Image (cartoon, rainbow, N blue to C red; front, side):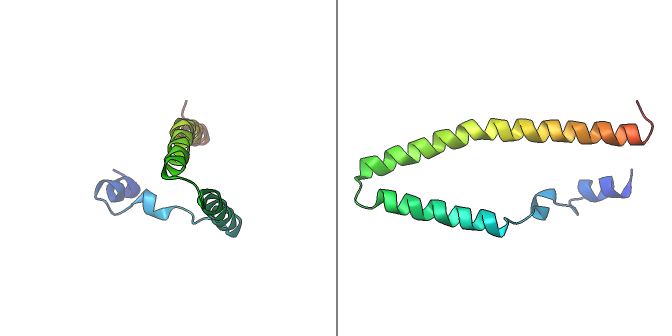
Length: 89
């Protein structure tokens, strides 16, 4: 087994801990969204807040499969590129 596979098998590599932190642009966008959400909810009823939460959950639910599919396609392409580079068909 190659070194990287052994490290992964033994838990020495944790890919999820190596994610890239959000860029300053992304952080500013997140702050803007939070502020807009806060402003929207000020003075709203608990029912309005619940409806917004349901909307946000449905948006996330719809987005998750698209992200998973994009990851799977990217992973497949990377494998194909690796195999082509190694001369394996």
